[in-house]
Image (cartoon, rainbow over the protein chains, first blue to last red):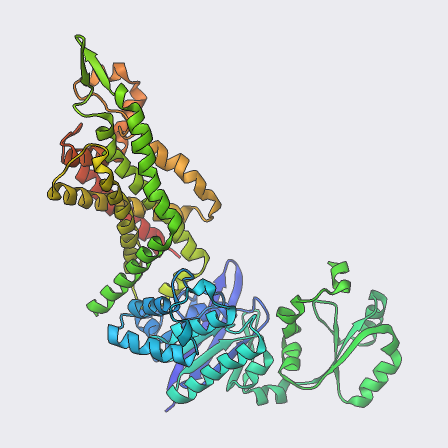
Length: 321
Length: 268
């Protein structure tokens, strides 16, 4: 029989009048690495908050490591480690002091604390920084420390809410390296929310949320097979072009930044489109079936909107807002 | 299980104490404040703190002004540290540290208890620093007196730190905080018979002639009055009110404020 690390049934939660989560079912087996994906405000953080018992759902049941998290929250909390979206380290304490504090709060005896601190500092390659005050560490080092801290008490499950946002590629690779290593060695279950596609490719299953609802769920390959399309992404030169194209292709999708997305069957169709409209576009991009195109198909939003596009000035967009 | 929870409380307590020890600004304030009050205000007003009866100079109360002021300065130091503890609570909430503790298996009342215990310890330390200046104030006390005084300081610190947490739950920003010193700490301090005595030789009606009724009222309803009085009783042997009132008032504050703080804390 499969042991479930997380078992959620019929979960709904209303926050301030908006339905943050709407009848969500979720079952994550032990040792899985499960990704939750969705545009901003889709309910990812609410889901994590409910799973780590910081928030109570309106309806539904939540079982964490086969413990009912709603009736026995303290017991459920003992089995999870959490890495929050924003740093929750005490930046006036040193690296070791932060870990030591966590160990004390989880009631670990001294010998165990020392052993774990040494082990984890080695794992996340922070041995040399043990006595540095957290304020002096770089963003990537802080994240690694937070992961080490979440693992201090030996949780069965690790929740990571956008653990790698804002970090450089090298650091992100490193962090995923640690996590994969742990998952294989110790059977740790991972539940991750992230914006980065290459990180999700390695996950065993993905849940896509939008407006609090489950839009799709499956392995990366399944999702690509079921929802992936070849997409043509275009940026019209002006609004007149945009309305012309929209009139010709009623099923076109509009991204929030003005970009238009058209599903394309094959290259011939793309060539035909380009012959008609190519000269009136300021940017064209094709996207083959990938998790990114799955995401756009299902939610009508671009994953990259949330992250990378924030950097660099976009004059056209600046004029419009 | 028990020992696990105790470790948790110890961890939270230790963090508060360590943070306070590293906060140089707080330390400087804790030392410079009593120095200014005692050396400048105390010594400056010392000559005026006496009355003349039949041409004979005597002190209004049988102590010099610096001696009279000394216990009140201890209380002032505790008030600042305890009430400004709210900043630490707001800080934890703002910068997400609170969540780190809330996802732990510790029950929330123990989290709060550990935190307030830490804050009270720091406040008591700041109160005890003032005792080092006792020689300047010409006050001598035995070890027992000193320990009793520290015990009372801790009791007061616990109540006021809880009060600080209650404030923190109502004030959500750092900006609102400068105001506290002027709207809460100093008014409470000045109306606690800290810097002037209600002449114990006078009857109630005579007191009302010397002081306006509202001021006498303010002093009598102010719980800090009894804390100051109680500390004076221990360090000087001088009480303006029955000696048991002070500890009773401070004990009540500690319990009531902690319960209110807990009530707030549990509400999401």
